[in-house]
Length: 276
Image (cartoon, rainbow, N blue to C red):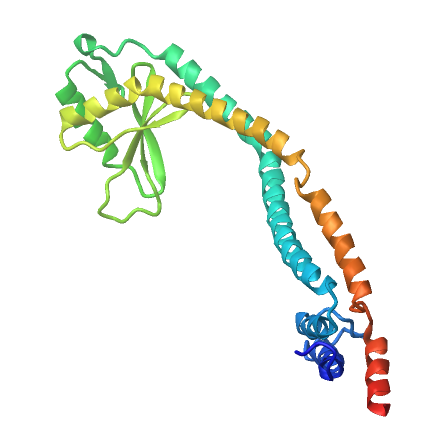
């Protein structure tokens, strides 16, 4: 592009054509008017202004670039704020659920009877056992009759119900699940022998304290998350002032460079140029 040459006239013509064609090619059947919103049309206008030696063109390039960046950052910030607000709305309910679980764990821990190895005592189907091997055999026998999708209390250990459950979705050959039930349910690992089965039941009872500790940590983290998000959603977009200034400056530059015309102005200019 040569300053002061016929280039400005050529780029003016291209600007007029591109502004109209780009809007029509959008294919929006609900659009009843065409406005100068396409980047291609602005690019032709900028080259036209550049040919005229206008220093605002270079400023416009910088303003447009920074504005596009800040607009994208604001969009991302708004999406994150929306996610934060959604999570914030759900956190009180989650915290209450965790508190209820902590309370149940505390009750179970307080109700747990002595489970030391020297004084083993377990009831299976109404019969009391003092030997782990015999108790384990009785558990296996009692668990065998649980049907798919059902559960049954087969005994008592340390003041808690021993429950056997066979989920509906499990395959025919898979074994049943076993758990300790108090105010909450405590899963029991699998075992390969009758004595081992009783041992994993005792281990589940021993883990009650750890379960309570983990749940208290979970509660503390969730409450901290609530506090952090409450502060976060109250914060405004930190570049809002800069974004507003850039938008205003862009409008001023566009007006100075004659880039703010609507469709009718563009068509009129095209007709005037052709008539000349």
